Image 1 (cartoon, rainbow, N blue to C red):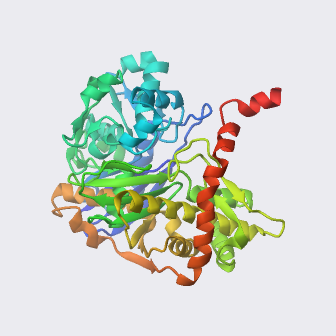
Image 2 (cartoon, rainbow, N blue to C red):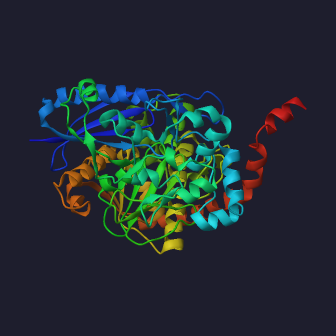
Length: 511
């Protein structure tokens, strides 16, 4: 039997998965790498760390499954988006990759919006104001602050583009990842050279475009030797992680939605309609060439639970800690004694777009317990998800129900019940929620190889592990607290902006 090697390139860990033609995961291997924060708002990575992690994971997975290199039908990628890496004339990195977490390009984001009429008009055109974490501002930052690097760059690629070059020797940019640049023409499926020139960017620096399911090439001899695979093994492009997740969740039919609970929280709906972004919801190219994904991200979801493990329990954020936290949360009454938590630890993209907003406990009293604070954190993320789902319904009339759930957070049964109760949605937790992005990449590759005729045909390969129904008895308390939750941001917005404006606290301390 032949297998697909699918690599899920996470923020700090590469997951290597061996997937058979029936969508079964035969083996998984993990390899970690660092992320560097050289300055405030900066986040950078060495892309070679990814390649080394891929090589390590490949050998471990093959050994674990007892497979030979000749049993690998192809390899493919699920990679992070919203990152940029300039390459020189030899396709070598000119500087570390600027990560999706990087928010340095604040002024460039404002410049982009000013050129298009200001934040309000810009939001009307593309769905929301942009921030320093978005990709177009990062290109402009590179040109403005590192002009020599920009001048020497023959190509500006993303994570997936770099890995595809390492594997095949071919420089390309995959459609779904290109659709987040702000420079992709959705109608023609081409780069928008006119828009590039408008912003002073050189169209020649952007590689040729390929579809998610396209064979980019075969493994070149050097790559094959480093990975322990056969030269010429087919390499399928894959897609951005926000686009492999819907496929790996099975939410591939018209109007179907999924929720991904990792460090951040993603909500997405698949559609063949030509819809534009609204209210912080982006309209992006799907891994299916004929569809779009309407997608939005909450910056911190699982990260809130990790914070609670570290700061409330002084415990490592790992499986046993989360199991203990789940038990305490399940024992508490819904509503956490009237305590509300806003899960905006790192600013927010959706349901509010504000890089200066921060998390808060609201209505905390002397009688509240640590376990009530913990349950309020679980519930706060659920309120945020409900708000996002309300935006989908308000702007597009879309109400995906049931909602497929993937990611590490899907393993916590109490959290799943809370999210179901707060949102009023049925949740279908996939059988292996942590493997969804790697599985999604593998299913995309299978369509590229002709094993399946379409991504819709792969839906049956994604089994549901558990179904969670909302409890009507909990609706009254959650409706009241959700209504209060919606009022927190408008009430505190100006306070957040004042406290978190650059240099404000330092100036006050010095004065």
